Length: 115
Length: 193
Image 1 (cartoon, chains in turn cyan, blue):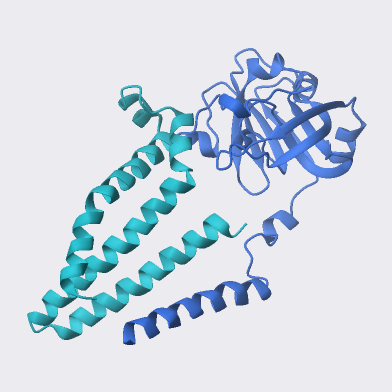
Image 2 (cartoon, rainbow over the protein chains, first blue to last red):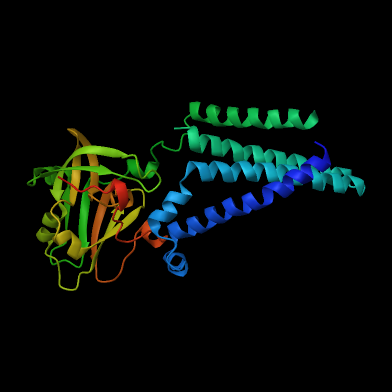
């Protein structure tokens, strides 16, 4: 993947990823912490947190953005490392991230559609 | 090209790992050694006048009550996990046999796998629909608490101990921050009949 395109994807996925990640984190605490619910100024209730946190759209949106953003971000980082003469480290980072992202995607697929 | 091949290799490893393990009995739902060693009775203890153990057979011999209710889990609020007619003994009856001591505030429930949950004594004494079920839709089940209108984490299964306490005991999920009352709100709210 060309670095320029990768960088563009990183930039464009940042804000939606922030939104989705924020929703997942907030609603996760809303599910499991009474203190968090109290601190939310009345926005988070257990059932609202449940609706957000268990929404397939939000979960899949979050994971898709996470995979896309992280993969392209790693491509950019890898290229930077290569330009700096650290080819070995670049490969280790890239392959490590690919393996981890595939694992995340696999768990997500099974969690959502595995019955 | 190298990366695509590597990705494919990882994916194949995952598929083989997942389905290969399943075939060899690596499924986590396999019964643990602990559950095989469980005792076939429920202990009723704590803040009571007469602590006692009740065997499954003795439980089934007590006057029963049938409750039609659906079990909803927090992770799938619109889809009942289990539903039908539950037959069991009102929890209130089991507590009355033990004689609830003044000052008893909550009831701690323990399952054979270490899971715990809780209910308020007052709620239980005022609700005949909360039963310790031993049958669902005509089929025998391990003793399970049926708490209509509340989330599934109150419906403890494989019940081994009921302990009355005078403090604010919280079960496994309640300690993790789930609402202690656990009433189901919204469209899935259902009572018992």
